[in-house]
Amino acid sequence: MNTQYKWLLILLVFGFIGCESDDDAPVTDAEVAITSGTADFSKFVALGNSLTAGFTDGALFIAGQEDSYPNILAQQFAKAGGGEFTQPLMNDNIGGVLLGGTQIQGPRLYFYSDPDPEPPNLSGPTPLGIVPPTDFEAENPTTDITSPLSGSFNNMGIPGAKSFHLVAPGYGDVAGVPVGTANPYYARIASSATSTVLEDAMAQNPTFFSLWIGNNDVLGYALSGGESDPGMADPITDIGIFTNVYNTLVSTLTSGGAKGVVFNIPDVTSIAHFTTVPFAPLDPTNPGFGPLIPTLNAQFASLNGVFAFLGVPERSIQFATDAASAVVIKDESLTDLSTEITQTLIANMVDPGTAAVTGFLYGQARPANENDLLVLPSSSIIGQVNTDAVATLMGLGLSQEQAGQLAVNGVTYPLEDKWVLLPSEQQEIATATTAFNAVIDAAVQQEGLAFVDANGFLNEVSEGGIQYDEFLIQGNLVFGGLFSLDGVHPTARGYSFLANAASEAINTTYGSTLPMVKAADYPTFYSPSLQ
Image (cartoon, rainbow, N blue to C red; front, top):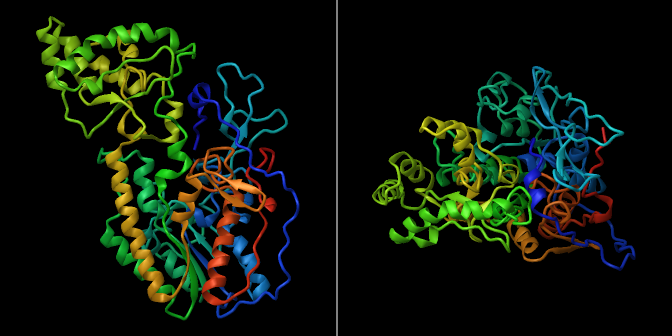
């Protein structure tokens, strides 16, 4: 992820929320014998996606992997008869991967504090190497998937994997990575070009497993803003496919008598990636926007008159001078009034060319509202000139200057669908998540597995936070403690909380007495100098 979040941090001020209580007294566990109960932790294998791998701050890197929830669990399992737990560690703490020397993901983000807070303020989540501290120069990440690892690995978390990818032959074929048919992280560790993640996991004869999969089956659609363009869409996985695959995963993993712990799918629209950018970020005190408000309102006046005439005054666009204003978005669920707008303007003596451009731009436009969710990367493009839109508008006969004025993202050019999750798209996600979680719950009940309600956990975090030792875990970006700087993946402290939740579920289900880890032992930020 290479977004610097410039616009967000020009328009917003992150509110610091105190995480620590006044009570710093250490919390100690009662002395109890650590036992495995009816579980056997001697061969633990973890399956899943980036959440299992330890992905954090927008990348996979050694420190994050060491703080992954399976690795934390394995350390607790070792106290109750657990065996060695190997992970496919990356080559450094810069993060990201190469394909034949070309960077295809990463580096990791760090929190950069701009010493000069005046615009352009660059403070915020920043990729290593973009604005590095004076005592550190980021290098290119050195993990190249064309040099795969040998052997087997207990952590089979594959960043980017959907449910069906875990049973897909060829998902680890290096040759398929450039064309998108294979995954670079699995290609790095796959036993062969035709093996599957599940096969490689089962080859280790696990006695205990963790399974957290299905997040990407809805998250991909959400991250794309519910993009409707067939060439850009990342559709929600069909419930029939998910059901068949998930049941196959569980039945196979338990076929040799292994026990396990599974996680359900949280409401992805509650993560910081979708809750950080407000629907109304256009600040009249911003020198790049405020002085333009009178001119903008005058330009939109005739269009607003057309909206009123057509019976849709709620689509009117007007920017406030005394409060933050909503961005303008394209809502593809609205009736397209492009033709009606054009014809009405022509009837009111507007030249046909201008009328056609206005209809083209605003046929499905409206101001965003509190029911819309803007994806985190939108913060870097709001208020910026959309060069693709400039080219399109010039093709409609406008000069480059005119096109530039009408191509300002979220102001004169409605934000495209990929930047916004509309209420209708959010409902699709909610419906799918509920259906997927019902499948997971049924599998848990049938096999008597330990269960972590990740969905309930995130709901609690969204509703005010959860106390974790002396810290309050909340969901806001940067200072909430749960979400890392990419707004999607947990911090190390967040992963440790999830490991504890898994330990508690395992203790309850199998009668084990695994101890809990301490929140203070896991950070919420990694130093930019960590290499």
